[in-house]
Length: 471
Image 1 (cartoon, one colour):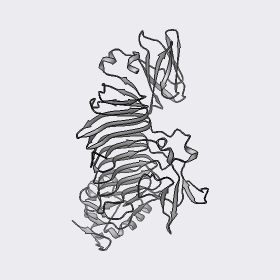
Image 2 (tube, one colour; image 1 turned 180 degrees about the horizontal axis):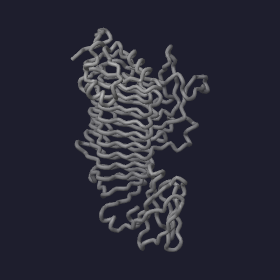
Image 3 (cartoon, one colour; image 1 turned 180 degrees about the vertical axis):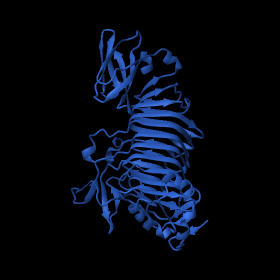
Image 4 (cartoon, helix red, strand yellow; image 1 turned 120 degrees about the vertical axis):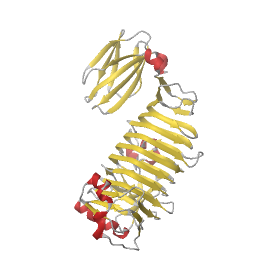
C-alpha cells in the first residue's frame, strides 16, 4: 500500500493512466479524469477539477490529510477511489475532512479520523443533486452532517465508531458568528442546544442583522431537506444516534443501526423545526414547519435505548422493522398526524403521544397518551368497503354501508406526495379527526359525498370501516 502525506510528495504522474480508473471509476464517470498523485496536491487537484469538469481518480493508498478539503463551489465535483478498502484518507483534524456543496459525488473510499473528532463530510450551506456512495467512515465525531439537501442520495455506506452517524438538520435558528480572516466563521446558536460541534457558514448568508445588544448574527429563512434516498446504510457502535434528520419526502431502504450503549444510543430520529421552538426565529415560530412523506423500509435495530423517535411529523411509514438485538423501546412517536406501521414486532414496547397510528397487527405493549389506532389486518379488511375517488376537480358519492362509521381516505397530489385523512361519523355526519383540507366530506341521509378540493389533487382511495377500528 502506498503511504502518502502532506510531508511526502510522491510523483507518479507519468504512470497515472495505468491505475484501475480504467475499471470501476471509468465505467461510472467516463475517461476524462485527473489522477491524485499525493495528498499535498489534493486541494489543487480539486480546484483544477472544478474548472475543467474532470473527475478526480484516487489510486489505492493511504493519504494523510492535514486540512479540510474544500469543495465549496457551484461547479460539479466527482471524486472516485480505485477501491473502497484500498483508498484510505486519514486525518486527526477537528474541522471537517470534506466541506461540500451541491453536485458533489464521493465514491469508493474509506475515511478515518484517528483522534475521534471532527466531521467526515460537512455541508456548510446547501447540497443538491449530490451522491455519497460506497464509503466506509470511522473514528469521527460525526460521519455526515449538513443542511438544505435536495435530490441527493446515500448508498452503500458503512459507518462505525462515531458519536453521530448521519445528521440532516434544519439550522433554522439564530446563530452568532465570530469572523476569521478567511471567509468562514464559527456558528454559535443563541440557545445552549445545537446540532453538532463542527459547523461553518459561508461569507454570504441569506440574512444578517443585529440583536438588541448590537451583536451581529445571521439567520436563514429556509430549512428544507427534501427528496432524498438512503439505501444499504449501516451505522454501528455509535454513542448518540445513528441517523437524525429534519426532512420531507425521504426514502430509507435496508438500514442497519447498532448502538454502542443500550442506555443512551438512539437509532433513528425524525423531527421538525416545529419540535424545537426554542431554536427557531421569532419570525418562523408561527409557521407549520413539519416533516412529512417519509417511507422507511427494512430497518434492522440492535443495542439501542430507543429504536425510532418521531416528533412533529405529518406522515411517516415504517415497513418491516427487525429487532436483531436488544432494543428497550422500539418506537416513540409524538405529535404525528399519520404513522403507518407494517410488519413490525407487536410485543415490543411502543410509546405514542398525540399520534394517529395505522397498524396491520395489534400491538400488545403500548404506552399511549391522546392517541388513536386504526388496525388494518386481514380480519378487518374483510369487513371493509373501498371505493376510488373521482379524477381531478370532481367528486364521488356513495351510500354508507350499514355499521360503517369510520372513513379512511388516502390521496395523491401530482401523483407523488401522499396525504391521508381520517373521518369519524357522529350524529349522522362525518367529522375529520386528522388530515389536510384537500378533501371535503358531506353527508345527506345515507349518502356521503367526497370532493377533491386541491386543484392538483389527482386521485385517491377511501375505505369504510366499523367505528371501533378508528378508535
